Image (cartoon, rainbow, N blue to C red; front, top):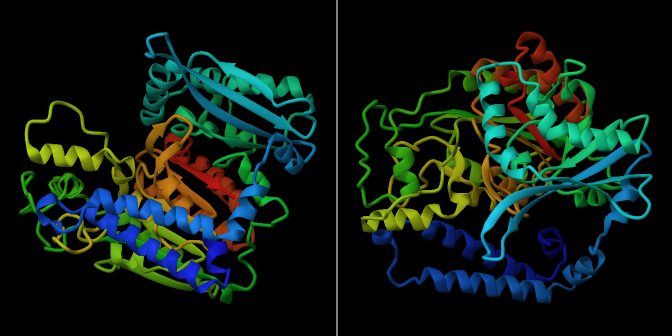
Length: 483
């Protein structure tokens, strides 16, 4: 819709859109401003209603948007038409079962499978053990990854039923599987599951491509999205942001207190941490990638230390590649009894999952009232200008995590950067080794700059890292989602 409006030539419509964007940014800033610091003349609920109304007006006035909406009533047959003879698409759906008292009793996962040979309807596979997959089984998977232990059970639970279904549909197997995760499948990396029969990881046996929805395949159809960066380098621009100075005061001890009413809950959570460790590997990582780009005559902006700021990220306009190397965070929703007004205010703010996940940038440990606080939340990332951005790399801990909402996928940085326009996102699912991350990223870019498609370059980088670090903990932390 945004692209259609900006390309419509309708000055009034474009002006309305720009006004909507400005009001949305004002709303986000207000939302993150403590009550006592807010302009008392602004009613934040009224502002939200005005933004929604403006959004509806823009939709109504955009004739091209109406036409586009009419064209997008897709069905599974449209997905089938995009698949080659040896390809399959799997759409996972997370469902909650309720009893007559409207109480949640169990979780069920449904896999809908489509191939070029699907005729009457998508193949249906129901996994009845959703509660097990989301609780004990996932804890078991996490522990085995973290402590680099052998794990053959997770394959049986999360993938074997799907693999058996795929085998029943094709004797020859599938050269490519497009997988749209939901629920718990957002939080694990399928490629790290070990097949106990073959003693190989899925990474070595299958070619699984993560997509946000099988609908993506329809929108990708007919486009060659895999850029060959070995040509036309002058047309590309890269931004490398890393090694931020988290505490601009230059001191190890912080003045911020948990009761500081001039800060919001998110700022207090980050600012009152014991000193946030500087990631030395992110300096080496961004320097090495900068050198690679320089050798290939790609225009690059390297922002480190005090320049690795929230302001500089928000000022970006459609870089070809955006690489951010820093700490990522995901704050669990606040729980327990509310005893103070401050806790009530924090609870209200942090109920929004898009404000509980983000990236830490320069100055995040000494945020100043009325200025950017060095914390780029997912809510703020949604407003970035990334419509022509081919790749966003979030080289940070836990950047793929977010709230799991039924039918809505991950509310976190993944969703935010996709909504901002990024075609492809490379991100992490758990805390990663600094050295391994550095090696993975530099290898990925070497393969990418040699002209290989993004996904092929990423898989080759994982396999090479696996040679040096065999445990999935090291090579399996990152996933690639999108085109």
